[in-house]
Length: 177
Image (cartoon, rainbow, N blue to C red; front, side):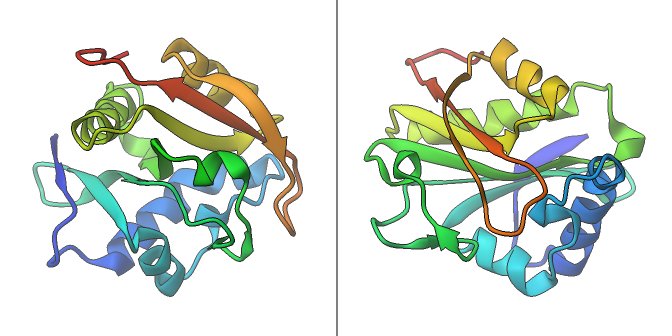
């Protein structure tokens, strides 16, 4: 699997379908993650100002993705909700739209995508990386904790069936996990 920057020729329709497929198992658990049902326009909006990365299978299919960006401006909405203060903190990169196709899981692809996003953030001079995930998603939270992310707060996004935890990881030069 090749991991590379999202390119202008990449299909946002295909990327959105990948997100839907990757998040379907979470929907089955009752969690309505935005990526599980977002439109192509929302995919485009969430990539605005971000560096997207994709994992590409040998046959050319997009099988993984992650986006990373700098902090939001104070007062700027985050997918229609007020932005948590963590996401406006100077020196903070924000990870979003992280997904691996179900057929490609358990191959280390998610770790490689996270490595890529963190390396990009480090190269841009960010001091930390932040993300959020569903509070009841204990397996996801544990996976992020193994990478050095710590829970630093919570947020209730409008319309979500779950509370989210905010997680943050300091970036040190040369640190990859």
